[in-house]
Length: 265
Image (cartoon, rainbow, N blue to C red; front, side):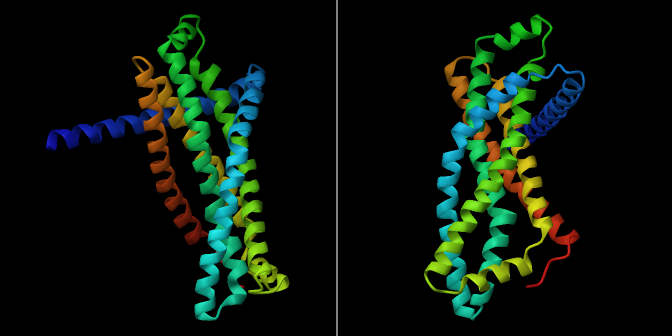
């Protein structure tokens, strides 16, 4: 048991290092290729269209019930303690700081990440990546870097869409059921929300999108064997992405709360 635990810890450390190296190399290729005008913009645009197609509708469909659940739970708690006037502030700030980036990251990890992992895994199994290296072309430069940049852009845009969809749904539900007036709802939200909340959401979207795509690319490029190896890589990529996203989200939130003064409604 001890040997098994030690082996798993070593594998975890090795995987963490490989992910950091892959992320650093991807960002380096993005910057250097854009400066030298060698960046594959056609691949970038194709990946943007693909990510939008597979994630936009599911993201909106998830954000609507998320806004409903948030408003129902917060409304019930606010009614019990007599704080109905703060429903708008808690709803809006909670969705903006936590809900929107998390929903976006889970969609990126689940829908986009699994597709990227399966695509790169299939290329690796068919030895296409080996062929690129034989021709002197880095698979990270040709395949991973455009996907990383596309994921960063789409994650930021999806976060705004999720926030607007969930907040609009929560507003319509709370005001429509007569719990509070529209003016009270908006006044409480404006009184507590800060511009840094939006900056935090976009920063989380960038980091979460980077993590999800790097994990998917790493698992895809490490696939060895046949179709089963690709399926196992996809499963591992999704599970590892969700775990990392949860851990990183806690860390970013704690740092934000400690460093940024919180507004008072």
